[in-house]
Length: 132
Image (cartoon, rainbow, N blue to C red; front, side, top):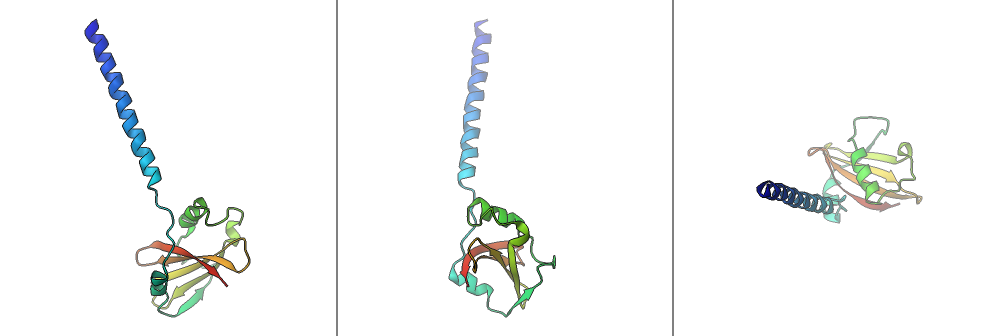
């Protein structure tokens, strides 16, 4: 009977240690979660070398920006008060169709969050604040 008791205690101890290790890695992963990246002037200027032309917002051919918008809202860069139907102000694409610039409205008039998208890599490069 004593052997059965030690075996049970060893399994409980193994379970507790495994639980603590799992919790540690979950917390570590959440802390290392990437936030949206603020673009430097150099990277921004690389995306604007060619002529930019405005494309229609009703045109669905531009990049799916909504997952990135959710990240911006979670990081408190964009306000949750603005309706999604009013969020996209303008969309621009360069002449080689490599980059898109999406202007997102903020609560302040003539202040925007500009998201730069690399269409070749199919991901957002980052954002920057734009005051007109």
